[in-house]
Length: 399
Length: 134
Image 1: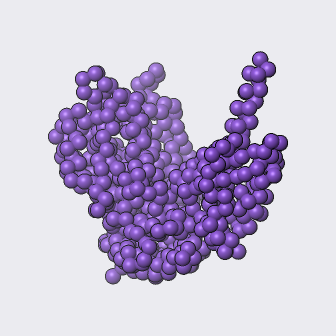
Image 2 (image 1 turned 90 degrees about the vertical axis):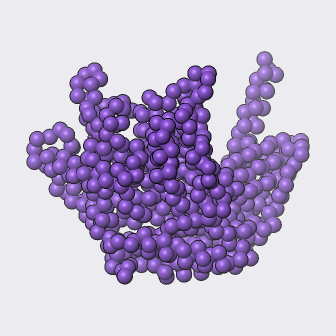
Image 3 (image 1 turned 30 degrees about the vertical axis):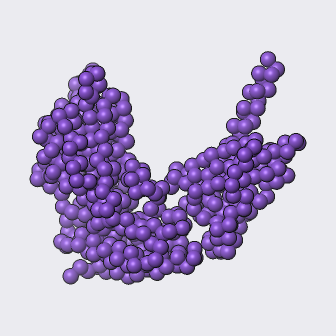
């Protein structure tokens, strides 16, 4: 049995705001006490820069930073040197595009240009770096379309992948619709033509256990703040043989072996400057927290989202987009999403209204914006009831 | 006070000065980057350069539409300078409901559009003036 009240106790925010209904989890999750404590402990006891000192505190900082890397590696079934710390998902995607992408995507030689395949489901973080790379290189940007009935990719999308495809960038879970594209099919099609797969795992990491070896994707990235960790820290997973051949995109402190340009091995090569050590320590605590959460947490989230979806669908003038898993996107006829969100906010309900940094998908859905309620481990059926009753208030207000 | 009080809802449902002005002197267009809302504003000046008529069309939320409608009601007779010097605080006063920081962009979408258009109009006129001098 899923014990929400016990889980909720781990999150100080609900002590401070007992009536808070936090349904903006796809944007960022709340932080458990263990994460906050780990970060405070680091700054109180072990604060020193990494890779430089021989005194005890510096050694402890080094050890903490590298333990955090090991923890991330174990979390996604990777080797420790396949984990590069970054500040967020956007930085990870840009790193792959600017380093790996810049090398492998060729320019248009006049015959048939290389192409990069992305999907309409992508968050801008896994869309714009590829759009810009394609534009720099004169390559084609091919977009897998969304089936408006299911919210998932249309059948036959894999046909866009051909022998001129160099990179396929795909989300594991849409931040707007919650749908999860068939990654294994995409990986198989991409690898059959020698293309590499870059996977946005920002949403999926909070939703299911990841196993990079099993998925066989070439790159994937996770951001800490969506899995109960701090903001400003995340990691890029890359297959070792690929990372080893990639040039740095930032140069400076902590990434060089010798002048003028003999770089350190990966991952240090990609981590120029003082890293976010406290963030990494917080992320490690978040991963430990998530690993200790009883199995079935995603079943709980999905169940709540399903109840919300069913109840919202039953209301006149409310349109629910084709959603799956823990995310519900909806709109109300004649009422702007921002107005809906404001009235929900007056009822202590936090949701997101807007384009969710997914303009290609908004365009496909034919809207400027949606309201998104996204569920996490600390949400309850009571939260769903409050959401529904506040949506009814919106309907009455704009009657 | 309720954000969605009677006045805001009334202006949202029946925006004053909704539409376009074919022979407008100053036309502006703006976008709210948060949600893609759009607004287009039109100003017609009289022979003394004072605002004679205002019109707008908007595809936006209740706050942005109602705010533009309310602000628009008080524009006739103002000089461009008077309009430009309207402080945001004064705008919030006109709207009459508390605007949270998250909704500031919505509340100011219409007036920002007008301000930008006036700036552009003045710059173009100054350029024309320079050319005529030359």
